Length: 613
Image (cartoon, rainbow, N blue to C red; front, side):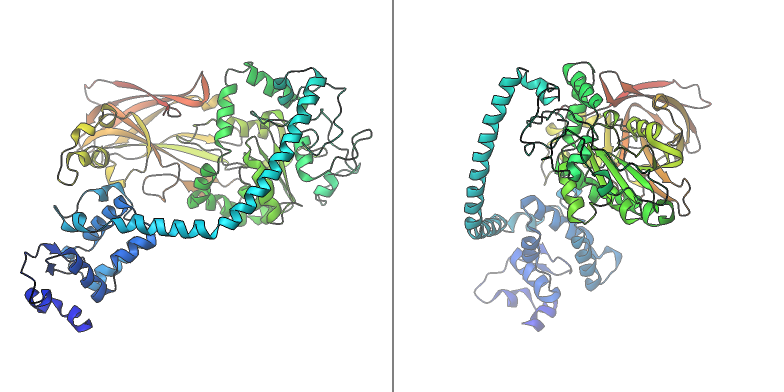
């Protein structure tokens, strides 16, 4: 059988089919060879036998659905082409490597590589769903007992919660205050909780947390001796004896201590914000609620360029972090806190207003770093640091958004810098630079417009919307081949010194045409630099052609493209301002024209905002 497979191209097709089969037209191309077959099944058997390439096994291993198989087959057809003169073995190796990296999982492979490819129409896809269903049934069957035990546990927890809710209702009734006031922390100063186990003492409730706050208390007193340069402020020191007259039953765990660092001003600020004292209060609630979800943190952690830049800046510069007090602004899952602790920091303080910090406490504990890391839940503008910690040596934060400034987290970092950074201290990253370039729309049209014109031989152009033809603003991975101009650094921020007011700006730019082609899109990306007092500087780049990041590049589509001749110069101005009704979003205005020509100056407005959909 092996010999038959190896020499199949030398055996007449009629002999392979058997005497009882009637000859058919050989119209199925082999996956890797020039041999054609009269059925998909024979083409697949040939690939499996000669090259040990089992398409169905690969499908099952990757769990591909109907569309995944379409992409995979078209990918194989594309990469296994013999047009480059490579051997079959080389083509097989190339395809295997690409599949392992899931290179096939792109929208462009929904378009047939070979017109009217029989393999796209005749291959049985039903087994995909059957295989998944079989695996799901097995998992469910094996988990029945576990689920029963979990249900029993949840029922007990539900019963306990019901009792707690009843108790809380009675407390609310006795206090005579509205539930809303209680949630925001305005409990009566004479009220005292006899059972502090429901909510840690001094906890500030954020954004609809249904728990009832305890009365406001000052953080526990610390030992009187000052924290010197050679002595690390351990958590044991920070959680020493409780205040006189405070509840002796309160467990002074790190969570309680970190939450006690939230000041009374925080509670007042949150009430004003939610009650309408701050026009952007609802914006902040939506913002922090979004960062309570696991998915957004998973995306950032999987961004290796982003995460490893922060790691390398700390691990390769341990001398800068050794024995320092480090503050992480917007700590999220605590990855930067843990990097700093491992880099030698004697104490790390992480602040975050989203509910993800409850998971972060578990992460820090499970990684054995609770003795070095303190976590505080609250908006940074409204919290205080633990007593006897007046200043920090280093501030780290991953504050960058799309277009660098979207989400407006940088002003919060600057607030932390101005309040707590010691003289000579560092903020990382300490510099950010924005770049601009011009590009065509060929890549976009191929992916989002031309696709609908030929879908497996059918015209579906009616699916193209006006927004598809002219999208305005988006975040995309732009290919280097799309660029038609040089790149220009149009705005730079020194995070050590920049003022929040400077984050609304207007900057000019100059671009030169690399070839004669239409300028249809403006591309903006940024670099973040870690080099302040570091022996080993690190740069995180989101530029075109660099390692892809979750930021991608910000793309502005021009309503009036420019037809450029190679060497021509395009000049313009980009103005960016925070929106009045949402300080985390930006309005951008771009003016542009061809220099030295009697050409019109074009002006176009854009918005960088959260989608309404």
